[in-house]
Length: 350
Image (cartoon, one colour):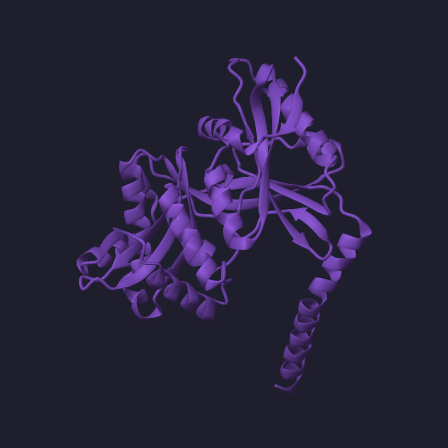
């Protein structure tokens, strides 16, 4: 049966939310409630493109769109790590039938996306959807990225996978009387977020007021939680924002800690206690979001997660967009070049 595509009207979004809940590719990132909160905070906008067979949605993508001086574009960003496809599983037990179903759906979506007048399209799908051959065949580039996903369906097995040093820190947190809370204490969270930015040059995700409103809306909609590790006197010394929804895998999208108390093991304590809370509610995994090679990723790897391969497909961009990207990156390239020259000069003097 032919596959057709169209954009959903807002009153049809509950149909999309149902598919997101049923699909292994779904996540909080694709939920209308999450997208509405993000767009309110960033000034972006979204629309939902679906593929249908016999008037039934069989797949689609929530397109979070932004504007720049180079044109409108679709791309992942902070707080939108995945912006990829969500497909309805095929009921057949035969792999061939399942693959054919998936390829037909993706072919229809690729044709619809290629017809959009966007300056750039960059789409990162979760590791549950590894087959991007349709897009590669049409000239899209495909680039791998990685994240760590911790299996929390069996806590005893999960604990055995945690690095022994982190287990020591988690136990230290218990001994120091740290407690886990889930509440709307945004000020404590943002104070630690700002500290982490200043200490590690980590990015600030949103301006203060927009971030506050964003977190409040997520908590109201039930798709986000703000967790804290607190001292016995109630002071928050580590925080993290977790996305959740109808899918079995949750997402830790932002974490921060108070530098004065790092030796107490608050970050490790918080991560593990959140795993326990989510597992008790029936969630099966937690995606730690991104695994670039840096000290933070080393910490994530010690939590016992599996390295997940995600694919990002990008549609070829025009000369104007490429020239703009080069111009935007030029100051940083010059700075790095000057730093290399300065280091070389110092080395010769020594």
